Image 1 (cartoon, rainbow, N blue to C red):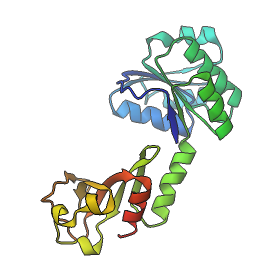
Image 2: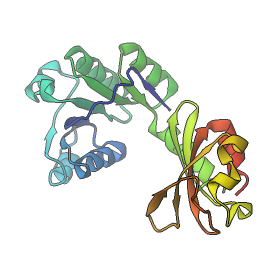
Image 3: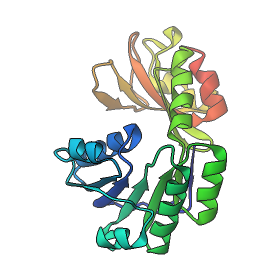
Length: 226
């Protein structure tokens, strides 16, 4: 679950990630893989040293201090992620300072509903609940109804599912999935990591996997067919 203050899409080339625990370090590494410059910040010198060869820059710093943030050149960053773990006070103070200093896009990890509410009331642009999101995603996979489950918005998701046996050998035009089930097949894969866009003439085969998008309730019902 994520609350966002803006829907405008902005490419963030310079990102500061504050808090290099499991979530923060994973996020920072992924940003690096996609070509972004990342400054990783943590209060633990050992963590900072361990990450120094993986990120553009790393530094040990207390981000609850306004002067420290200014020294880090916070005004030069397009986006900031507050990934601080258990220290609720540090998370809130850091987020408040980033907003006060005019960082264009501030993302903050919330550890609970009340924590998220405080961040939201501060005016944080994006409040994220990674544990909630992962729990929700894995629950759908554990149930056996989907192979993957990705929430896009409050009531819109994308899932990867096996092709129902009754669909095998038929085209999407013949199946009329959108009109019958209220969901849309957007891609097909044989499970090899290569995806083909779905068209009306696309034939589904036994063993294929399909990526389907739609609103939560009709999509959940559709996945029960597999």
